[in-house]
Structures are given as C-alpha cells and as structure tokens.
Amino acid sequence: MKKITVFKGDGIGPEITDAVLKILEAAKAPLEYEVFRVGLDEYEENGALIPEAAFASFEANKVLLKSPITTPIGKGFRSLNVTLREKYDLYANIRPAKSNTAVVTPFPDVDIVTFRENTEDLYVGVEEQIDADTVHATKIITRRASTRIITDAFEYARAQGRKKVTCVHKANILKKSDGLFLSIFKEIAEKYPDIQADDRIVDAVCMQLVMKPQQFDILVMPNLYGDIVSDLTSGLIGGLGLLPSSNLGRDHAMFEAVHGSAPDIAGKNIANPTAFLWSACMMLEYLGEMEAAARIRRAVDQVLAESEHKTPDLGGRATTTEYRDAIIAHL
Ligand code: NAI
Image (cartoon, rainbow, N blue to C red; front, side, top):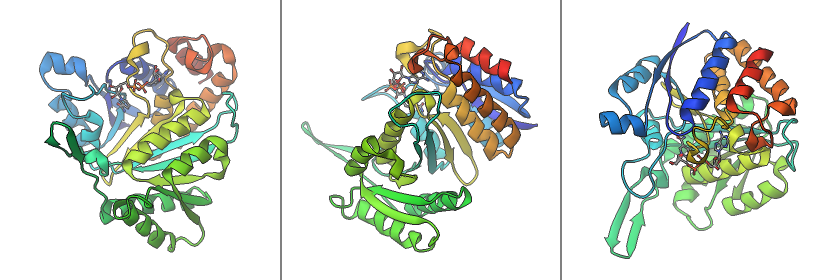
C-alpha cells in the first residue's frame, strides 16, 4: 500500500475530494490516505492555510492529491499553489487536453498536452511600487528552469510516441527573456531528431487553437502563457471540469485539477469531479498503478457516454454524488 497525502481545499474542494476518494476505494486502488483540511477555513480557525502536519505528510509521502484552494485577489496571502510549487520545486506542470467522444464540442479530435514551466516567469511575484501610479513586475527566465521543462517535453513525446513539440513564446517582443527560452528550445530540439519541433508566438497560437487545434501535439512554454493557454485547451474539450494536471519535481509530485474552487457552485452538489478524478488517474500512473487507473478511465468513459449521469457543466442534470455513484456502479 502506498501512502499519499490529500488536501481537501476550499469551495467545491471537499465535494470533489469526497467523490474521488470513494471512486479510488471502489477501484481498489492500493493506496492509504492522509487527508488534511487546507485553505481559508483552516486559516480562520488555526491561523495557517496549510497546517504543519499537512506539510510534514507531503514531505514524507512525496505524493499529493490536492483539490483547489481559494486565492484572495489583490491582497492578503500569496497563492498557496504558487507556494507549494516553489517549496517542493514542482517545476513541470503537465496538462493533457483530450477530446472525449461523449462530450460534444466543435472539435472531436483534440489531443494536446501542455508543458508549463511552473517556478518562474512573472509568477515569481516580485512587484515593485515605483510611485502611486506605476508598478513594475519582474519576469525571470533561467537556463536551468527552461532546460528541464523543455527536456521533459521532448522526453515525454518520445516515451508516449508523440510526433511534435511546439515552443510557445513572445520572443519577438521579449527578445531577451522569451528569446532565451526559445534559443534553449532550439538547442534541445536538435538532440531529438525523431521528434518534429517548431515554435509559434503565443497570440497566434491562441487564434490557431480555436481555429484548427488538431495541428498541435505537445506545447511547451513559460509559466504565464502556460496558465492561460492550458485553460483555453480545456475549453476545446468541454470546459474546466475536464482538465487534469500533474505538477512534477525531482522528489515530489502533486496532482490537481486545473480549475479553481468554483465558489459560485460550491456546496450545491453539482461540481464535476472528472478533472480531479483524471488527476488521480495520472497519480496512479505515476505510481505505476496502471490497472487501477485504466479501470477508472474506462468507467468514466462509460458514464459520460450515458448522458443521464452528466453534471450541469456538461449539459446534464446529474449531481456530483449521482455521477460518482454511476462511476462506482461501473467499477
Ligand atoms: P474556477 O476555475 O474556480 O471557476 C471558473 C468557472 O468554471 C466557474 O463558473 C466555475 O463554476 C466553473 N467550474 C470550475 N470547476 C468546475 C467543476 N469542477 N465543475 C463545474 N464547473 C466548474 O475559477 P475562478 O472562479 O477564477 O477561481 C475561484 C478561486 O479558485 C479563486 O480564488 C482562484 O484563485 C482559485 N483557483 C485555485 C486553483 C487551484 O487551487 N489550483 C486554480 C485556479 C483558481
């Protein structure tokens, strides 16, 4: 039995965590769970967003299944997600967006994996108030961080038998910072002659993604573009409820849905837990538990194909618990 750490989070976090843990149990995933409440309620009661025991658990178990946490905008504390990524050097944010035949969208054949650099760029959060009307923000791009994310994208392409890696950037304007990222991409691409490599400017990629997404395979990019472009890819496959992610470092790994805590639907039992469930499948695959992951993926496909069990974001009327129970019934 592998022990993992689970963070319950805010908003829809507790609802989707409950659904996912019950499904993992029904799939007989060989896991033991250490579950922690983290986020705003924890902060208000105990003065810390993440209790020390939760950090200690992740440090020991090295694998974290994390549901979304609310980040107050503009003031207050720094995003917990950014903190976790930095603290554990979870530098590779991998977000696979694949069409599901049961979810009708204008594009039935999207299969794009975004590799987002997770530790630097504008997300270092260094902002300086120059005067009352002027703020400077620092964008950091380093050879070390760019090299490891770009190398991971090519290695993944090779391991998964994929054909092409596209570097997404704005090097025409940010000649030094994005220019460095792009030049490192070109250096690394030469070591992978079996994989096609090209590069595109981020604004053009956004237009092409909504016109002809099938031309893209693997995308690799700095942090900010990765955040935005991967949400766009979730729209191509049916919305945020369907986009999972892994955040990998050398020692630790964190798995979470791409979406946030969705306060507008929290507590209503209508959140779609699929993105979080697929994140749990990515975790099982990371742990080498391929069979349990495959069982869950098959059950989800079957349930999505039966439209009576779809949640409202996918045009259905099922509640989170009805959808969960339908998946468990298939397992
Ligand atoms: P959001 O992703 O929470 O919600 C955007 C829209 O998508 C909302 O209409 C929501 O109802 C819908 N939605 C999201 N997930 C859904 C699901 N599983 N099923 C059905 N509908 C779903 O983004 P928003 O509203 O910008 O952020 C809310 C909070 O979440 C903020 O405090 C933000 O900072 C935080 N956040 C946390 C993340 C994390 O913990 N990884 C990631 C993104 C945002």
